[in-house]
Image (tube, rainbow, N blue to C red; front, top):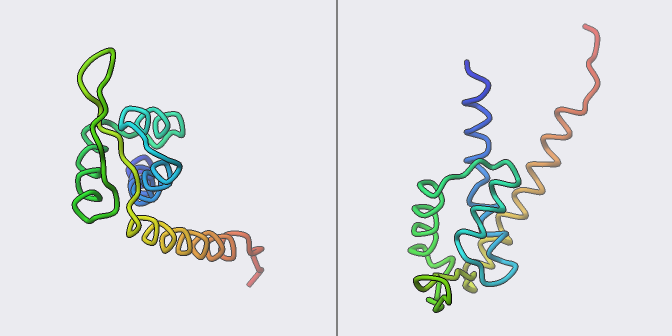
Amino acid sequence: MNLENTQVQMRKGILEYCILHIISRGEVYASDMLDELTAARMIVVEGTLYPLLTRIKNAGLVEYKWVESKSGPPRKYYKLTGIGSQFLKGLSDTWEELVQSTEQITQKSKTIV
């Protein structure tokens, strides 16, 4: 078993949650999301981010608008929809439960058998 592969899978498992959280703060450009995710060591590349953004857009969780840029082509800015906000609330509740459950298991002292 490869530790690095398992770590990558753990990050992938929470990537959508993290992306929705970033978008929930207000309209955001994909490149800025990528920068934040990279800085947080989520190790995301454009080839991972853009398909995920398309998937959550098609699910009605986010929408986007085009904004003209002074330094190049128009930029696509994402924001949460009402459904996306509800979905993120459900994910946040699940995240809190998972953190509590994980801590309950990992923080138990070893017992001598």
